[in-house]
Amino acid sequence: MGKPAKSSIRICLVDDQRLIRDGLRLLLEMEDDLQVVGEAENGAMAIKMYADLQPDVVLMDIRMPGMDGVEATRRIIERYPKARVIILTTFDDDAYIFDALRIGALGYLLKDISGPELAMAVREVSQGGALIQPSVARKVIAEFSRMTPSTNEVRPSLQEVLTDREKDILKGISRGMTNKEIAMQLSLTEGTVKNYISVIFQKLNVQDRTQAALRAREFGIGD
Image (tube, rainbow, N blue to C red):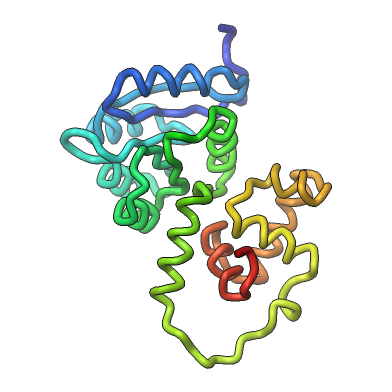
């Protein structure tokens, strides 16, 4: 395998199973712009590895002996607020999902994801985005909806807030679609979609895709 491009996204893998780490490395390094620079088998090792290597993205398992992935993620983000961590796990467990997102993980993916989907998620998070697998996103939206008290407060209608094109893109976000998928569906370029999303975030006063999806639910779209 040739040397990775200078602009490669630097990735650290954290998983207690060597076979899983080997498989992830193989999948990721099939992509010219992705480079695995370190591996750890538990949370404590992950913290030291992050300090030593300062990767662009960490793929973090949850259940590991000793310190688990949620605690390791919390400690890494406390020390390095700009750290970008994606939880990659076999466990579609509500408590883990909410704990991981609450402490600042930017992604939550299940290990049944395909190689190309994983590569796309790493790219998205490396650029400052957030990505949650659709099946997981639905749980998050449902939980936040349940936690939000009903109110008779008069809200501005969606028509007063967003254009039709912005509503189409927000609908895609709420369904867990990537920028590329939204662009293909709407016959736009990825750059155009990214620009629209920046405007949508500003109009809705949200910081990331998860918050935007929650707002979409408030407006009754994306179901």
